[in-house]
Image (cartoon, rainbow, N blue to C red; front, side):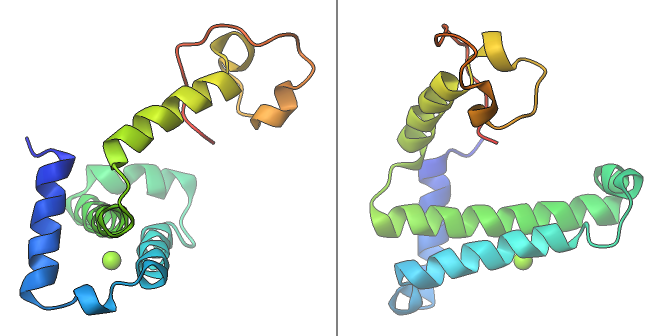
Length: 132
Ligand SMILES: [Mg+2]
């Protein structure tokens, strides 16, 4: 098992061995992160929902997904390192915010944005949910 800190060290070592830090401005990293996310999205272009759901079940599709997800993660790790953000800490904090935004009592089994729950009573305790 490899944790975020170890992955960050390895990605930064890869970058530094090639003297690429000089190109990694925050803008370049954000652009690159989004371009890699677009490559992940491209795997779904013109595909049916059934074909997309089947991607992880075939070797070629699973490899393509894994490659693009890894590209996204690598740029995210580089961006976090360059901006001094502790990604694990930020994720824990954001999960707590999302839990406030999406209380289980209001949104369990519902897919609407949090604004759809406005006016449905006071916030309740929550076990958390992911941002949409
Ligand atoms: Mg890629």
